[in-house]
Image (cartoon, rainbow, N blue to C red; front, side, top):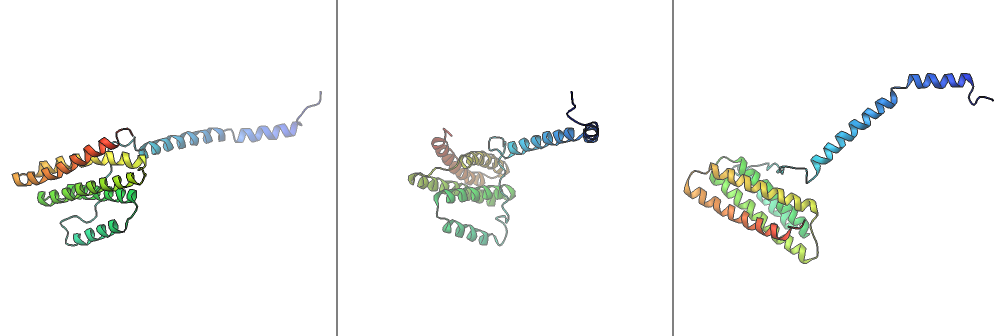
Length: 195
């Protein structure tokens, strides 16, 4: 019976396989390593995988002399944003930045005023979401989940600010921010419970 491969060709194939016998092992190792990092990164980016909402860095704090310019810029951005869902996302972003700024400020009075402004942004977001709903638009699930995480973060930060406030007047002002937050939280929970 004739051989399919010649002896020299069979030897060259054997040498090739001998030389590169580690290649499948190395390739398999890198594929496993890549899939582990890919799944871990995907889990970290997932809305459901996040334990805490990372609030955006506020930049300039309310006790900075140029803070009114920042507020003017934010108001201009709100004025020029027309789509209700985009406006709702912008309100949430500004609310998150302000509550983070309130958390970073040491003075309780300034922190309380900034926290109140943050909660007013959330109430404005409610109006934008209601306007979007009237137009037949619904926010994406990532936006809704991000809102839920933000509500929890806002609640925790308001409690932290309350621990810093010593006088009765300061705590009374903070109660206003807490009431605004509770109002938005109840409304949001009643509208987006099924998602």
